[in-house]
Length: 151
Image 1 (cartoon, rainbow, N blue to C red):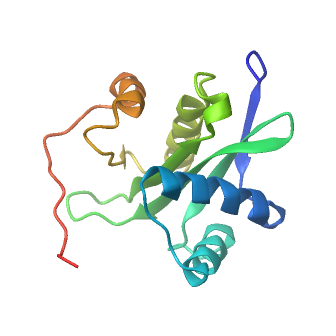
Image 2 (cartoon, rainbow, N blue to C red):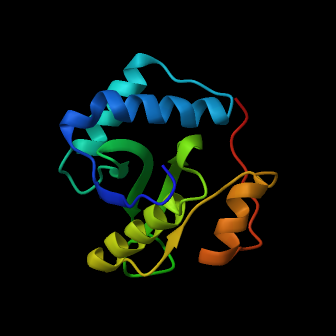
């Protein structure tokens, strides 16, 4: 697929099967899985139309979905505007190196600009060296460390 142009577009209901395959691959990368109920709920939120719903951009090459970005707008106590959280970013191994990740992040940046959200942020694992090479070029690292409630 090298040399081909990617098209970045919003997720559509007709993308459910392709989206599920991409999201499964993403979850596999992080060595995790979710129930079918979570798949159904997440997809419904991604194609929903309420303000608190998630959004999704799909990257296509040759009319085939090859990447995704899930993002959410939310309020923030330190700003009057909403901010944008880029939760999931994935490009299939067959298209890595084509700039798909960059294009997806830039599409999320554009969506945030359109919504008046001045900040877009995301998390990654500290040992995700390949992704961090891109993130260091297109984003600015912070010194925050994530904590969560023990399970």
